[in-house]
Amino acid sequence: MRSALALTLRILQQFRHDPRTVVMFIVGPFLVLWLFSVLLTGGTYEPRLAGVDLPTEITSVLQEQDATFEALDAATAAERLANREIDAILTLKDGTLLVEVEGTDTSHTSSVIGVVNNAIKEVAANQREELADELKLSLEKLNIPLPQMDDALLVQDVEVTYLHGSDNWSFFDFFGPIFIGVFIFVFVFITSGMSLITERTGGTMERLLATPIKSWQLVLGFCLGFGVVSIIQASIVLWACIALIGFPNAGSLLTVICITASLALVSLTLGLLVSGFARTPLQVIQFMIILVIPQVLFSGIFDLTTAPQWMQILNKCFPITYGAEALQDVMLRGASFVDILPQLAILWAFIAAFFALASLSFKKRKTS
Image 1 (cartoon, rainbow, N blue to C red):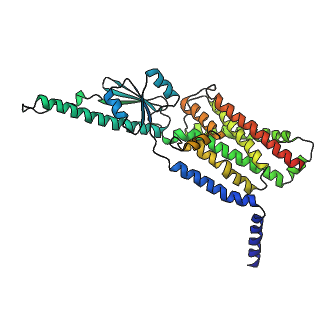
Image 2 (cartoon, rainbow, N blue to C red):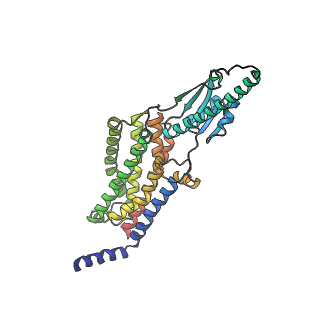
Image 3 (tube, rainbow, N blue to C red):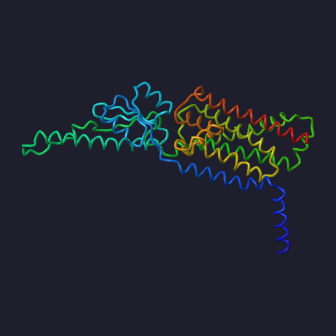
């Protein structure tokens, strides 16, 4: 018992002499739980609808629904739907309400269909009431039953079409590309961070730093070595997800590989940067809780449309956001390599920044 108490005391003393670990033990879980609370207490999503040449009887009802509605011309509506600025376009043709949805996010599609169904029921009820009043006035003095009025309704049927995807897409199809990006990002970060900590604890890093090698050359060597492994890993994961699991892919496979490789290099350089400050494997995990887990929450797994404005702005500061967006654009919407160049440029800007900071951290260790 005395030996166990002595070991307990030694562990507690280690924590007392390592305040950074103690702080991250407290801040990390609190940060993640707080972000979860904000994300999960957001309001209900209100679909964004656009009407093209709809009668006022329909537009007036749609404007009263739990949705954002605006009247647009056909060209503007099609452009905004392609840019995901709206969720659906509504037009009326020969008594059929045509609903063209963006289609990739099944939850948004369900919201659109729910709002449209409620609006149609209200329009039909209003019109039946108006027709009944007119017929009652006309047949007030005659003992004649009211005729069938369904054929006179403004909207008699609804037809839903999809810009992307189809009605048999599952909830998982929309999140598949996000999950690919998240798992690659997390596993590459852990692999690179833990490997360098192993190099340091084994004394290999100290011997390397004692040689004439420059800090940027050291980081570049690790990037090239781990980069090859990370790209192979990303390619295998991507192949398995598409060929075995059945994730949809409407774009070029080479473009998707380029995105996943770029995302892996971002995670690799971030892992190298973190390993320059971490002293133990435990600290790498703690850094992951603070630097990686929040990125996972902001990757698109949660809908930030109803989140606070500051959270939507913060979302644009994380590299995984751009990687997940690019993967969704290609795999779900069939975007070309040119279409996702802005996201790739941002990812490579993060790679350059993390590489430079990692070089500085290793330089500091070398001269200290």
